[in-house]
Image (cartoon, rainbow, N blue to C red; front, top):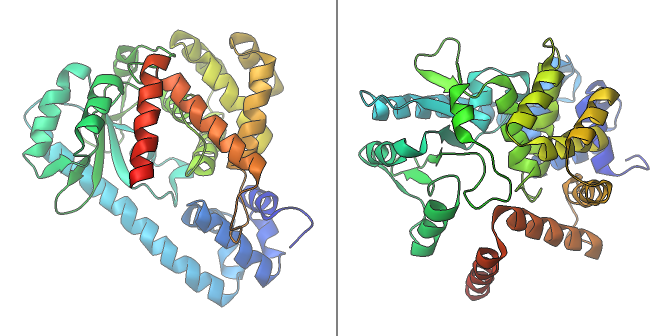
Length: 364
């Protein structure tokens, strides 16, 4: 391996797949393990294919990647089938099928969705339609994935979605959202504006997604407002990198994105997202857009810098053989975890909620 960390080398290979070919077999194996650790192996394989690099790999690596490619193809097929089943459940009710996140990326055939492993379907519905939608789905063998009364109360009273639903036979999961931020969130945005701007999916009947700017802003909010950057944090950051780069080819995209963020009161998380992508994964964002986002955001220089340092430490790809986390990284993870909950809930709800979660973990 080079003098740099495997995380740095992975991001280099992600940006320039041709660099992967010049590495030794041991180096390639290590970076593929890094990709697997961050749920990016199939997506990295797709980038190798798009760059025409896959056939030049050693045969054992090609065979290994073939397996994850088959799995990713099957997952996309399963997601499309679940959408079909949801349409069936909603048939005749007038309920819209408005896709969010991974399912929306796949149905819109966005380039960064190639190889993306999407495990559940997320829908957006008007709050007034949630009860009817849940009733229709329960009648088609979906059931609550969480049975604890406190969890049910937590989602239904405070969050931006009802408790997850799981199909009894297919074990697929479905999240029904009525907004993109929790009811108790410190950040307020009007979900009706999102619903008024939805766009139909080409080639699909009665299936919609958020409009281009809102699709990006939802990804921004999901990671940079109440996300803790752990688990799928790197994948979600690279989702944003792909969204920014793909839509940047549209005329006036950056201006439309900044204006829409201001309309929806999302200038702060957009500022964090643009600077985070530019800093960590080197997304080519025009300097004037970074300046404009900074000027539009109420975030202070100190908070922006602190979040950047914490996020970079937590989200950076790690060596897959690391058996422990250094104290500074552990502290950064805890700080971002607390930040995500602080933004999500007022203190009077937050303290009892975290106390309950820690007590449950202690006794489990």
